[in-house]
Amino acid sequence: MSEPTAFPLDESKLPFKIPKDTKPREKIMKLGQMITDRVPAKLRRLTVEDPEYWGLASIVTDEMADVALKMKVRQPMTLPELEKATGKPAKELEPLLYQMSCVGLLEYNWENPRREKQYILPMFVPGSAEFFNMNKQQIADHPEVTAFFERMTFLPLEHITAMVPPGGAGIGMHVIPVEKAIETENHSLDIEHISHWLKKYQDKLFKLQNLCYQKKIPVIICYEGWDAAGKGGNIKRIAAALDPRGYEVHPISAPEPSELARHYLWRFWKRLEKNGHFTIFDRTWYGRVMVEPIEKLTPEERVNMAYREINEFESQLHDWGAEIIKFWVNVDKDEQLRRFNERENTPEKRWKITDEDWRNREKWDTYEKYVDRMITLTSTDIAPWTILEGNDKKYARIKALKTIVKRLEKRLEKEDK
Image 1 (cartoon, rainbow, N blue to C red):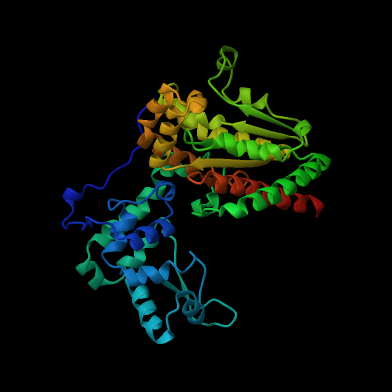
Image 2 (cartoon, rainbow, N blue to C red; image 1 turned 90 degrees about the horizontal axis):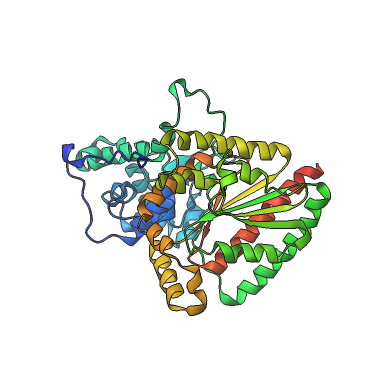
């Protein structure tokens, strides 16, 4: 099975040189990660090689980036609101906002009840970087913005377009925008707040479980993530909130011979709990589109079919009445290494680390590409992915509980209408 096609930009064939900073500018790095639509750029730290960085670095000053970082993506703000957010006086701020609009970083919005001028920080979805290419002088001074437009149009779609058959037939599933599909935040909870929020959401979840039981709503919670990301500890905090009579946790490993003799989804169908009960999967059917192609266990054409099969499987679960909640537990490469070393050097934790974990770590970059593709192709309205930032395990646990609580509250509210 070959890796997903990356189609790297051949810079040697360009009639200009793309400038690359030797030392990254931190504010540009944060801004690029904040406004990109690309999943890989959401899951890891940007580098100077990423178009989100070099596309901004040559035309966006640190002062501009500082203002943009005080804004929220796609949320209009008036001049007085920006004055308050940035602490800059209007006399200083307004010319800067004008410059930011001229280079293509901001958009104007007049479509509001008061018809007042608002400023919007757009997200770099495919095609949106054309604002950087609307000024002829800017293109002449910074020709790399044309390559930036090409990259920001191609890269977010590279795995999706390859899956669409001629004429676009046979897709049938609505894949939602990435910014809606994955909710990423970078927070750490103060130690004194952890117990408060943990208890608050666990108490809420316990009550919601009873209401789901009364309404006969099956709840399916799915966990995927990097090795040592903290999936087990996260599941433990979820299970601690639940009545043990109403849930089951299913750790998923390699299929048994009897399971290999059947369709790969069969072993998940048979593990589903009955109406009103919770089913928690520690690893899921997504091994079909991650582990199996990387380990060359499944032919490429079967893997490509699996994306549609999985979306249809989850659609059937939704039609049954299930609430499907999917988590990807993310950690960065350095944090994973720290946890691996801690496990090896702590006798009571050594059982958690295996040779296979180290071998999988060597394939990090390959796995990252498949995670990107998986999330992009399988985040749907009925079963979106939520990213849990696992570098801080305690924060990830609170976020998981909060996500489940909010989803179930919303579902029960619909049931009552």
